[in-house]
Length: 405
Image (cartoon, rainbow, N blue to C red):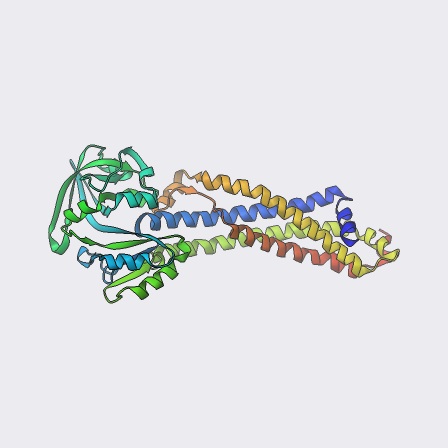
């Protein structure tokens, strides 16, 4: 009976109910939308700097990360690869060799990051072929290279031209070579795009005079959240006096610091938003309660217990919350989904400032259930707190004063 009475009560004054529900809908939409944009930006930052280069977990020589010299590279055995693949959560292992090279074309030169890769596996895991803007993708047997689009613009070089690379090979040997450009790619991170050169692994090993060597084993895992567990198990299976597994968090601590700093600012902004939402919800509940005091007094005067009336009031708020949150989520899902697949492209000074930090100048949303769940819990807490007022008002209601209104 209380459920039926509460349901009828909320629709007796449709305007008042719609105002309250609208405030909850607005709260849900704003909260979810803001958080999904924030978290989506962080995921994009991690993908740009981690997914394209280091991977979520790496194995390398124990001295390599502190001193990234080619002499601190490693020769990978099949046993090491088999041990890595046997760890739960590991999909595959890819080998990379990285080095600095001075790239020269006609009168232009620029310091670059040369990476030797397995083209097939690199495309499989980071969709490198989809980033081609000109030319064709390289194969394992090619003697040609891919370069970043910003690097190509800087050097004023195009597909078919020959790029001269000069550097230092294994054990101090000179590394010099001339390689035709087979394709130009556009990397999401502007910093990477300005310096990246991809070369088939065998060709890079030949150029660097390191025939069977690599600088890292990239461990491809099912889920980035498994990185810590996979890393710990890998270190228990390999000889850590020679090689070491590291997570992306250990390899890029500056990225973690930047994200945590930005997230702290984001929490401050979302906290202010929640305060505004709380005042808005409480204001509508206060208005609703004040308008109904005479109604409450009449119900009590004809025999209804205050406790029962308070229970009905709580049930009304539960109904209103359920409708508001349900409609809010239904409205938010398509909006978040749209901006997830169609990120907002930044321009002007904002784009330049993002590119200085190596971040792609776009704002995507993150489609994750946890974001919706967190915001729903917070909104429920706010509305539950606001629901205390009607209960308090009913229990302290003075009948004669209320009936004279």
